[in-house]
Image 1 (tube, rainbow over the protein chains, first blue to last red):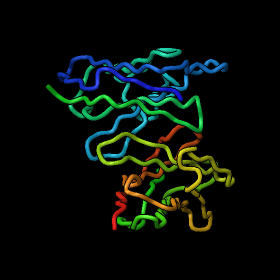
Image 2: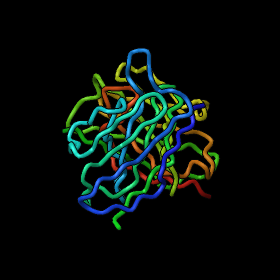
Image 3: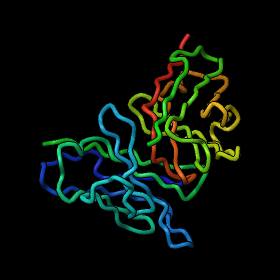
Image 4: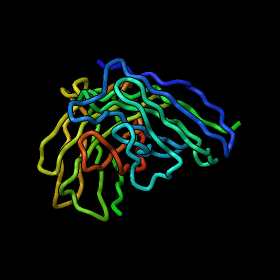
Length: 113
Length: 117
């Protein structure tokens, strides 16, 4: 099975400053079709998860453009250009290449300094 | 904009069957994948399975022997049944919708199911 790791697991952030979260996969998530099957979700406190980024770098509908995803193969990064207070929560990556065994990362808890 | 709402018993006894329904409002079941995921308290997410509007299904291999997902187009809802539950099945259960089988864009609010005698 594919193992997903994230770092850091905890990230204190300052509003207005950039933030970055890394996600690493034990196997390449690059499909022969050129897509990387890696998505990012945010689960705000007390809420359901919400899709932020899919296929590595595609921003989901309604997601602010301060969120961006990059990377290929086994190493991926989620960046927030300027953190806002509403961005706190747990961010997790998930590989969707090796179905039907979707593997989630452990999550990165982002909170305000 | 469609909305999803999970419903069902919040408490299930060990060895019994967990049954949940996800009611879809503001849209039909057609042309979408309808999934169930769960999240044990304080832990990460686990995908349970999906059903396509055509009726085709796919399940997490670790749960496949106990899971059935079905849909009812006339009632605009889809359902989850998980048999022989144990305390390890205690979790918040979410239903989701997407055009893709491998993505979950729209989520319900989630419902906590506790397995306890």
